[in-house]
Length: 80
Image (cartoon, rainbow, N blue to C red; front, side, top):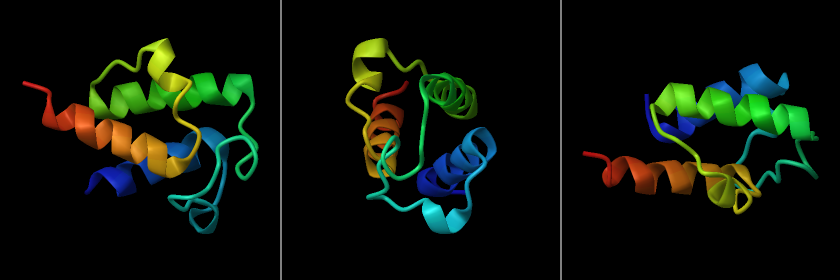
C-alpha cells in the first residue's frame, strides 16, 4: 500500500470521514472538520502507522491531506 493510501486509511479511522472526502487538496480544518482532539488522534495514528515522530513545529505546517502525504514521503526517504 502506498503512502497516500495509508494516510487515507488513518484519516478515515481517526476522523470518521469517507474516502470521497479525502483528496490531496482537502484542508484538515475547513474541509474535514478536524478539531484539536481530532488532530491529536490523527497525528498519533500517523506516527504509529509510519513509525515516525511528528514534531509539533512540523505538525503546524500540515494544513491539507497533501501536506501530510508530502511530509511523510520526504521523511520516510530520509529514514535509515
